[in-house]
Image (cartoon, rainbow, N blue to C red; front, side):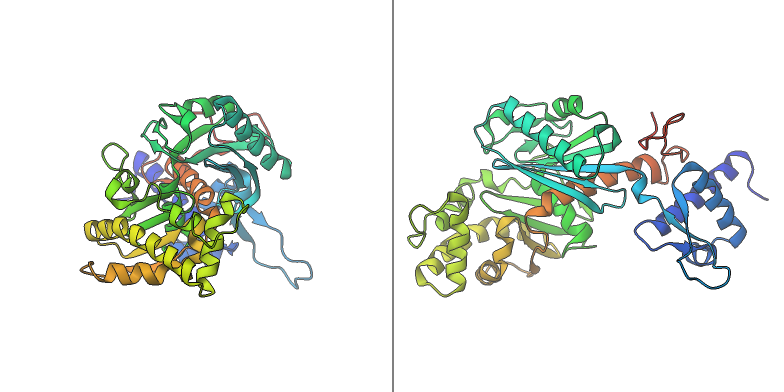
Length: 395
């Protein structure tokens, strides 16, 4: 019996989602190619494409200049039809990155910050970084669909920062609510280490891995956990806070590198650890001793996470990932002594961008659930009725 009523509407919805999933992040494709990839008939594919084009999700690509004959029509997902922003709010910096709906970064800005800055000053710096980033692409706040924020501290499910050792003004702060007044769109707030872990599984060395321990190592230390392919927060959003365990020595772990005797007097504090790591790479024994002490501490928390979760991969990320060649060998030797099964160890290729890229990926996940999940409401146009500006459809 052919599908009737709601069944037919549901079938069209699923067919549309299948075509969008096939087109997203891919090259433009012809109707025949889309039919082959989706398993739909060519007439059904044409019907879906026409509907998605009318909605504004898909557009036809003009043929390349100089093409002979009548070229087949090609279609692409309109990733440039909307814009997302990722924010990385650290103790010493604020990063903003603008991206399209496929997560391609279009512009990025960075502003310095100070841990003890008043709340008003930090919020003003966030707004300035966001506005400057938008300005690079000729856009304004009203062009944003979603803003996702990664910040240091314990962040609960409602986007409230419960506590932050790095930013005193962040304690018991409704950050999602405050930023929701700044941006005319949905704002999502999450712990920065978790977003960095998410980025690693979406576009980094842990891509497609199901179980991941991400070591967010720089001027401070943290972890992000991916379990069975999903970001793991724990019951009270406190999963991975190994820094709170005094025996691990993570709270002041980087001081072994910062205070090494080899660091020259007058060197800016933010450059001290990098200087020690570079000297260790060159074979300096004093620097290598400092690295060994740091690796001892790093291994305690890492071994606990590995023994508990048995991850496929452990990723060394954050600012110290540039020195993964120096840090991973001593970490590996220490883990091999205690771990029942050694995971793969890799240095991140995302560097300092890990949090802001994870924020963008987090925003994409939110929009996917809003528009493209199988259980989402009927697919609707991304354009506000009676306007020409792109943006999320009103709820």
